[in-house]
Image (tube, rainbow, N blue to C red; front, top):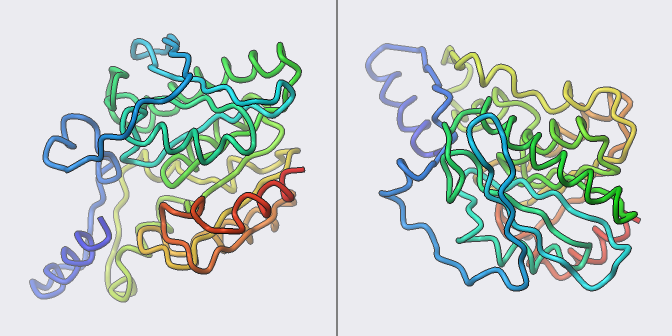
Length: 274
C-alpha cells in the first residue's frame, strides 16, 4: 500500500497534478479484493469455541480460545487489514496465550462475516464483539484487554473505550488515518494536497481515548515499513498530552507483524500490563 501511494504521487507530480484522493477502501482487503492476493492459510485454531454474534450487517464470525488460568484476562483482539481467523487466528492465539484467553473475529466482508468492508461496519462489528467480551469477562471475574494490531488499533480503541476495557494495547498502528497517509506519501507530502474520504477523517485514536481511565500500551516496531515507528511515537505522545495513562514499548528489531517473535516480548508486555 505504501509503494502504491508513493508511485501514485510520483506520477501525479510528473503530470503536474498535486492532489491525491484517498478512498475509504484503500485500507481494506475484503474477500472480494483479496482474491488476487496470496493470503496464507494457517493451521486450525486449537480448542477454539466458534461464536456467531449479531450486528447490524448480519452475524460476526468470532472464536474464543481459552488458556490455562481461570483468572487470566480476556483479550479482545482486532486484527489488521488482512486478518482472517482462518489464516492468522492460530498464530494470534499462540502469541497472546501468555496473557490470557483470546476472543477474535473476522471483519465484515472478511472470512466468514458478511457485510460491507467499511469503517461503519467495522465499528458495528467491533462493538458487538466487545459487548460480548465485556459480558464474558464480568461473568467470569476477569479483566478485559482490547488489543488492536495495525488497522485494528482504531477499531479496538473505539470498542474498548465503549465497554470500559481495563487496558488497551495498540500494536504497530497509527494515531489517525491522515498521519498514516502522510507517512505513505513520504517525501512528496509537502507538495501534495491530500483529500481523505469522509470516513477516514473520523479515524482519530487520541480523540477516541480522550478521558479513558484505563492504561494504554503502545507497541512500536523499529523496522516497521508498513506503519513506521514514528506513528507509534506520535500516538503515545498525543495520548500523553491528553492525560491518558500510556506506556510505549519499542522493539528495535521488530517489523510490522513480528513483535511477538521478539525474545523480550512476553516479559516486557506482561510487566507493563500487571
